[in-house]
Amino acid sequence: MANISTLNELFVEELRDLYDAEKQLTKALPKMAKAASSDKLRAAFEEHLQQTEGHVERLEQIFEALGEKATGKKCAAMAGLVKEGDEIASETEPPVRDAGLIAAAQKVEHYEIAGYGAARTHAELLGQEDAVELLEETLEEEKETDAKLTELAESTANEEAAGSGSGSGSRRAPAKTRTAGSSTSRRS
Ligand code: FE
Ligand code: FE
Image (cartoon, rainbow, N blue to C red; front, side, top):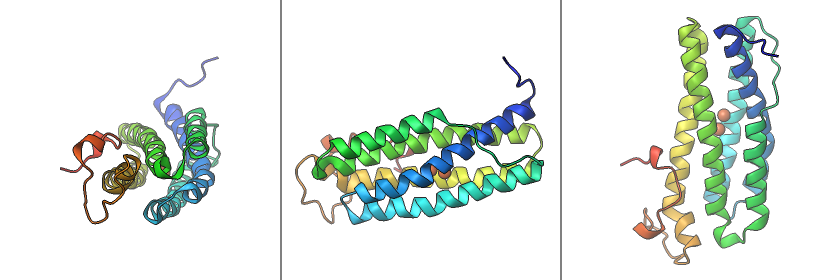
């Protein structure tokens, strides 16, 4: 029963998916923060929780400007990503937990980056300039979060997981441990 036939309808559908995804994240991030072993990672999750609350508000602004009710539509992908994060948290011992949590969180960020990128492009095509701007702001925060997670993975979590553990002060883990983290967001 296909009933989405215009780009505008598709755009609203995408917003509903993102809205539900962000709301799921506001519940998941406190749990991820609690599961984190390092203070730095916990702080990063807490900071992203604040940002995520802002992402929810931006979507509400867009719904309002479009004259649409702010309602979400179950985002199955985010539910799956959150479930995997929960599994990693419960299946890992502290020395490798942060490396696992970072990887799980980056999967979430990449999903959001794809979703916001598509929604922003569709808003552009529809001439919805205000929505473009709001979606772009959130997109940038998701990208920054992804880059920050890569940095945390490279500077501490991977090193600890690899067993060297004494890398305080060294910004980068040895090359052989630099496997986690997104290559798409690596700053070089
Ligand atoms: Fe977000
Ligand atoms: Fe995010």
